[in-house]
Amino acid sequence: MYNLVMKDLKLGINPWFLVFPFFINALMLVPGWIYFILPLYFCWITVPNMLGGFRSQNDLIFTTMMPVTKKDIVKARVTVIGIMELLHLATAMIYGIFTLYLYPNLTYYFFAPHMGFWGLCFVMLAIFNLVLIPMYYKTAYKYGGAMVASITATILFAGIAQWVGIQSPFVSDIFNGSGADNTLLQLSILIAGIVIFVACTIIAYRIAVKRFMKVEIL
Amino acid sequence: MLAMDIRNLNKKYPNFELKDVSFQLEKGYIMGFIGANGAGKTTTIKSILNMIHIDGGEVHILGKNIAEHEIELKQEIGYAFGGSDFYTRSKLKTLTDVVKKFYTNWNDETYRSYLRRFKLDENKKIAELSTGMKVKYSLALALSHGAKLLVLDEPTSGLDPVARVDLLEIFQELVLDGEISILFSTHITSDLEKCADFITFIDNGQIIASAEKHGFMESYRLLSGSESQLEQVKEHLISYKINSFGFTGLIHAKDFDPSSDIKAATPSLEEIMIYYAKKVDAHV
Image 1 (cartoon, rainbow over the protein chains, first blue to last red):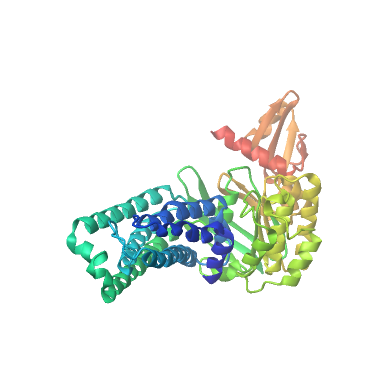
Image 2 (cartoon, chains in turn brown, orange):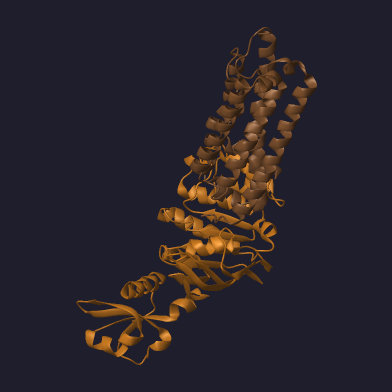
């Protein structure tokens, strides 16, 4: 499994995508922006490029010829997607801390980058994984349909969450108002988000393994 | 001991079917796996390697069932798939560093010696290698992890005659000590006449014959005679063609009476393949 993860990181993924989060997430420094877009950049840019790279390099045949199980092939790939997601969110969070210090008196219309907001981002990526990974492993190389479905689902989630965050005074208070200073509340939302992310990714992995077992490597 | 024992492999596709494919390869020999394009060579190889799901049959490699011991056996199988390229923009060095981690018996010294022997430059990218060099690189990888069975799918296709002969000589050297066995699929039959010990011939998803090379060729006769002579043997011929001098046709040696005055010769592998292909055409 470890060898497969390293194979993806060394061979499969262009190093640019390991550096990319440090550049794109600098947009966190834009005051009062709609920060939900930043994790979405991962879904829009990094993932299709990664999956396209694997496909064009015949990664599937290359990997199947190695002494590895089909289960480990999926486990490693899901781990790699998870690592990339964590890298993306972690860098965004670091920039977010700077944003909070740089503009302490800003009135946020959209969600402010407090811990609770990052909890929502984890939920968003959880939905992304839950849709993308099982759909992708129907063939393990076609990713167009899986991308459209997973991106639509994440945008819907982000759109609805942000709309509720603006329309509902209760939700707005939790994320941008007095709730933002309640560390315990913020931390619990973040932890809940992480738990949902891990749970959905594990479910996605299990469905993907079942589907990949039936895939014929042509 | 059998390096490979394939029994009653069946696989059905909407437009193609592998039917009861069975053959055995003794350890330490080269088996040529021949058949026209689309005859089922690659499908058989992919079934053997558990890459596609078979509908029925069993595959034993080095005495073990691949369905049960896939990971263990893949440590001992080396591949060269002509025509499939992986990570072509990476350097050999980078690819090797990744690949070697997967194999418990990887030997760096062996790898270095094959790089020298095959004149492979580690700093070159896969895309910079010629077709023959790519096959040699696959061989170097396979031999460095101690592969006992080499499965080569069309390794000599697209190579010039010099590179082909060079590779064939390497294959022959590899099996010399009796440890390594090679299954070698190709449609370039002359390669097999030079180096194979056994021939397995697949046509339209079915094994026509699997036998020692000379025995296999001797089991057929290529007849040529006048059109009137054709009538004597027509119903036993596998297929035939008529030309201005009469006919030429392929027949099983057992169906041919040697005392007949029809001219008979031992066919080449290519001729056997061509006449079988004609037989299929005739039925279409």
